[in-house]
Figure 1 (tube, helix red, strand yellow):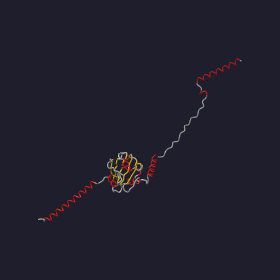
Figure 2 (cartoon, rainbow, N blue to C red):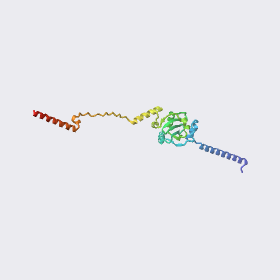
Figure 3 (tube, rainbow, N blue to C red):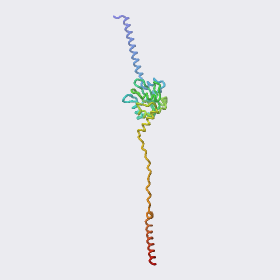
Length: 238
């Protein structure tokens, strides 16, 4: 028969074990509930990031070999789903997290990294160099004020940017210069057409007979013959 002291110790051990299991279960549930999505993660890491919790999501997906950042940019350009959009990009290892403002699905007006604190074209280059990660495209057409901090006047067009990937130039000027050269080369040499000066045919010298109407010619011929006859008559009468 067990002693009262032993039973009491056994009850205490069971109670402590039950509390530990309950605590671990609660912590696991809280951690699972707090797994943030990409937008939430960027907002938590950057205190100055705009509140995009109510912004509708256009699409989300993976960045990998079969869908690189180049294909993602060309898809945004082709789909043209939003007047103003914010693209959130993050690498799988979490070393790169950033966002860019896209206007009319054609021009990137600004870009910003969470860490390190980098913005503009340099931030854009880092984000587009992500080999593996995730991206989310948000429609901020009705929430432009919340994305105003991304407006930097960058004005980088998506087409030359995507065409230059994965080897982006050092500066925006170099990117636009390379774009202009590529556009000129694609058109090929320009064939200059020499102006053809019309040559007027030489004026033919028309005789008096060609210029006068046929009726006048007959009259003149008749008068000439009559004059000859009269001259002959005069000569013979003498």
